[in-house]
Image 1: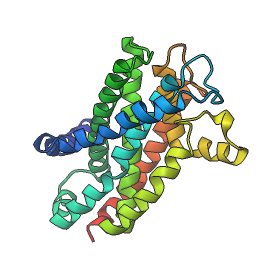
Image 2: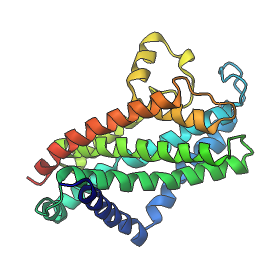
Image 3: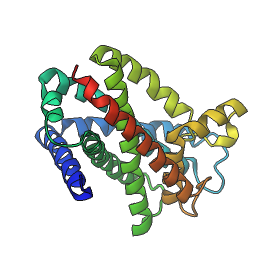
Length: 258
C-alpha cells in the first residue's frame, strides 16, 4: 500500500466523520460551555490565590493553556462511545470489509477528532481576548498551538477507541471514561505547576501525556514562553505516544465488530 493511498483513505474517513458534525453542530457548541466556565469562574477566583507560583504571568494566563488542553481531553476521551454506536448500527462492519487499511480507519477518526479540537482552541482564544488575558498572537505560536491541539486530540481519541474496543458496551465505556478524565486532568500541570506537587504526583504527571500537551501549549501561548521541557521534546513525546496508540488501536479495531 502506497503512502498516498493510505493518506487518501484516512482523509476519506475523516471527511465522513466531519459530515456528522455539519449535520448536527450542537455538540460543538455544548462543549464550548465548559472552558468558558473554567476561565470565567474558576480562573477569576483562583487568580486571587497568591501562593500559586506562576512566575511573571498572571494565573489566568498560566491556566488558559491548561483549560484548552482540558477541553481537548474531555471532547476526545468520549469519542469511543460514537464508535460503539457505529458498531451497533453496522457501520463498523461495513468499514472493516472495505479495502481501507485498519490503521487508515483509525487515523481518519483521530484526525476528525483533531479538527473538532480546533473549535475548542478558537473558543478559548476568544474568551481569553474578552477577558484581556495576555497571550501570544503571532502566527507561528498560533500554528504551534493548533498543531498541538490536533495531536492531543488524536492521542486521546485513539486512547478512547482502544477503550471502546476492549469494553465493547456503552455502559461500561461511560463508566471507565468518567473514571479516567478527572485523574488525567488533575494529575497533570494543567491548573497548577509541577513544583506544587508532591514527589509521587510529579512522577505521575511526567507519565501523563496530557502534561506534555499542556507544556507545549503553555510554551506557545504565553508571552516569554513557559515550557518546562521545550516544544521539541513535548511534540516528540506526543508523536511517539500517538504512534504507539495508533498501532494498538489498529490491532484491536476489528475485534469491536464481534
